[in-house]
Length: 506
Length: 90
Image (cartoon, rainbow over all chains, first blue to last red; front, top):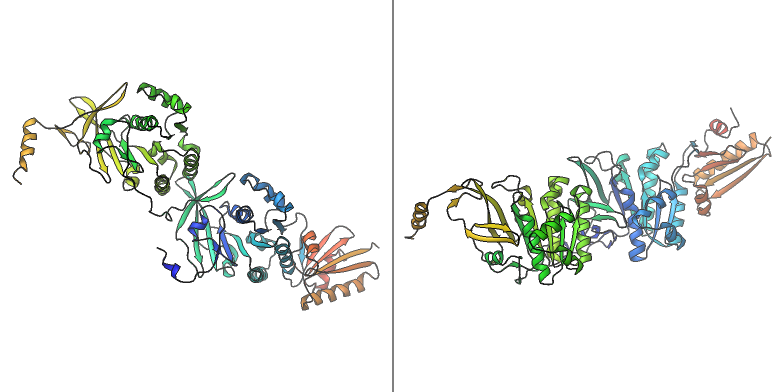
């Protein structure tokens, strides 16, 4: 599994920042200084503060926060929304500030040579005072603007970094970058804290901001490579979504559950598997919401808990739709078998949606989750971001051993596939296609089970009808070809006989 | 003449600290007669004083009195500039 684990590894300090310990293979290198570099607004200060806050909350470790830019009071106020009450930690002797921010209106004249001995003395005093194991310095760029002689500042910061190392504290130093992809940091600060570098990015991609974290290097120890998306949530702080760190180890069950439609269960060889992901793809109006509604009803009737995320229709619309098919969502909600979450995709970024959805799943503990529709979420994200979202959500659902049914709208009425399918089709266990079929000047609907992992299934394309009691599957559409490619062709009975007899001899 | 209150923050007895003390002593003797009070504070011994005064660099000279407050960083090697900084020269 882990190739490096055979050899001795540098000890690491678990940061407690959600997801970071996973992507860093256990945390920050212990007793060392890590440079956290990022452009303006890339959440450097939040990272620095969270590193200390998690230490206090989760490990009861004291922390020193050295601020060069904002005043201590500003930081106290700014992180309150994250749920971190610095003032009370200060009173408990868990957190201490070293306020090295410039004093407004008090400009110093420089005459002759100097060092930063006073700063170092203050840091050492603070570390002793709270018996600190964690130190954050935010941000180095500001001290270069306070002192013109950057050669002196650089060598003094190097002295501070080595003093921190000697005292055995694990430190985070933040530094500014001017470009998302370019030099590691301004003023060449990486030269003296080059052992470990973490980069925070806030990239503008197709008019949407996307935050990522990358561990560029950890000297002498391992970490996961590449950029990991993260988001900042009030009351929580930074949450890193470690997609490529997800392990493929979900269990697989052979217990069948109903799709909500006995006819569809028969087509699927006896129902869906209990911990599988089902994708329902079809053009607008083909019956995707109906399938998702029946799926929910099927679960609720078996006393399962169902969670429905709706991104296209409001609560009222969904209730009305369900009533139209003979399903009473209102009663299910009262019996606590159903929870309906309706949100516009535009209300949040995709990373935030993912976190919200995970929270709902953790809170409600459903047996079934339905997302209607997944493709609506495509609107608020870039191509890459969407793929990560889908992988993140499906793997989370599978880990919880919950069955998930996602719907996806195809852009064309006949045939076609959507971006959603391209991303998700290999992750899903079953794919059900709903298609319009034009027959003799009439639009009919066809359904087929394209894929059913681990089971036999009906390969027919069946016609289905929708009425006041839901979906009804009919006969296979035998005399039409080319439905899936969106180019239906009628063939006469004679032709069918000819095709059937074509391979008889073999 | 107003009485001068001068605080010099140093970090240990380094050559740079000694230089700053000597330069300040000379300026006081030559310019201020006995109208001054000089305090030398070693931040290694009294880091809390550096914390209260928000001192980063050493040596730092603070002219506490008479107002306005002035901060001068460095070993004070350019006497004329120090005099300007302390408002002793226009």
